Length: 309
Image (cartoon, rainbow, N blue to C red):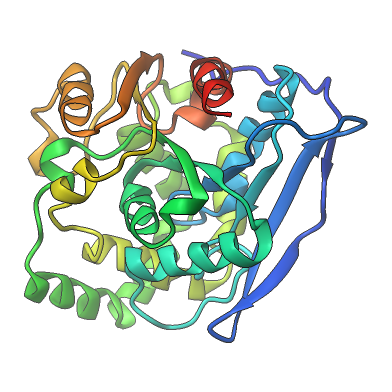
């Protein structure tokens, strides 16, 4: 399957990078809207995935296609701390940390209810954010959320700390230098993220290489790899009363052993069985649907977002 074509027919009006201060850290974001139109509907806030070189740039294709399809919502695209143009302190990040960052962002920058669109295993950040700022979240879209056995199993704290200490070392720095090479990024993306080898294109690889240029970006990635996001979220998921759309790829897979036996239909069924206002849809693609299957992803979520709006 080829990556979705994104026509450049819509002139996006994007502010340059903007910044706010949270906990004395400088945090970056962008605001997007189509040119020559008045924004309509509830604003969208995009939560990018964590990985080598990943940042808010992950959402560029989605943003273009969203407006090309005629939608007019304002889009807020923040860089999580440790990623993109935000500060990159040498700390072990948890979903609660990033949720507090986004809570502050919603309260001080956006200042109105939003729909969250969250990619992959960053769903725990959205879960924590719902707990902290429920009144500012009107709905959620989950793009390729983790396998149910993964999102409901806590990894031992000793294991998390052991992995963090192993990675937060000269060994880890050497590994990250290799992991940010085009060769590794292409191999990993082909094996774990995309349904089609051809979809791992130059744009994707160049974006990741540029995003990982600053070696300090490894701390967020290592926090993710150490599993600080791994806990049993089943009860918190069941407490999400906002309308929630779960979008799963037809060939969705799991990196973790716990999720390898799960089918895409099974993943969808598990989430819908636990979300009070959940609905779901499958589309072509694997694990990075807003990038690999951009047009289909937009078409799948637009009716839901317009209904919530």
